[in-house]
Amino acid sequence: MPSPDHVVAAGAPLQLSVATYNIHKGFSVTPLFARRPTLHALREQLRLLNTDLVFLQEVVGEHTVHAARHLDWPVQSQYEFLADSLWQSHAYGKNAVYDAGHHGNAVLSRYPITRWDNEDVSSHRFERRGLLHCEIAVSGWPQTLHCVCVHLALTARGRGLQLERLRQRIERLVPPDAPLIVAGDFNDWYWRHRATHQLAHPLNMHEVFELAGGAPARSYPALLPVLRLDRIYVRGFSVREVRVHHGRRWGRISDHAPLTAQLERLPG
Image (cartoon, rainbow, N blue to C red; front, side, top):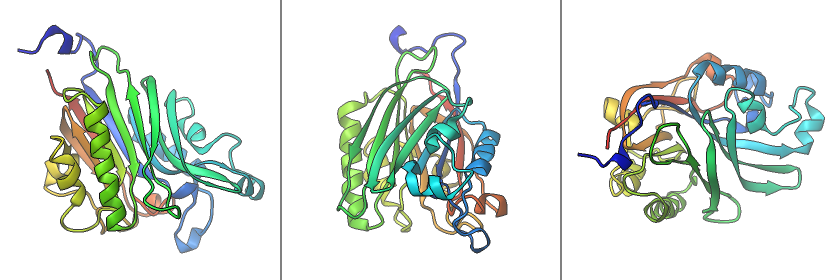
């Protein structure tokens, strides 16, 4: 029987909805809409998903050239523009820095983000990567929800090193009985699903689409997904529903399809 310290308070939310999405820096890549900003359409589509948490990759924090070139470029950072009034708390991890600005990962949350940190796990200087680790206070939950937003390297060697750093970080900083979500673009398209074996299994985590259908979701390209690049790994939750949002509408916004999952907090 769980101790009182680990019991979710009566009336506390047991269900949590999550999305992960590589937004391609706010530009479409389809030939008809090449290099056209998609932020306004993206914000509307994210609102329709209406999830509690959003894990975003390739988010532009600042870009002076785009801001000067495109009249509809928002004054705020992309993550602030997308969060708007729906997600009142957000965190941004700056990874790649260049003359015109910078981009990285972001987490948008309906619940307060009480702490966050961005760990540099770049495997070389030409491909900057980070682990955006947030602690979120969900009302009535006795433990902090830990969330890590990732965008791993394009090379197998780089991904392997980053998965090891991620595993070590979780073992060091996340209590084994705390609820945990790791989501993002893993670039893990090989049939062996290295992230599941190297990260999830040692940490007693589960990928939500593997639980629902036996394999990670096909999420790339968004028009007609073939490759299984994006993932949502969880610990301390059961999975009620999962979905890949793809097709022409989403394909005009980014080359990745967003994934969503409806989760339920496990007792204890």
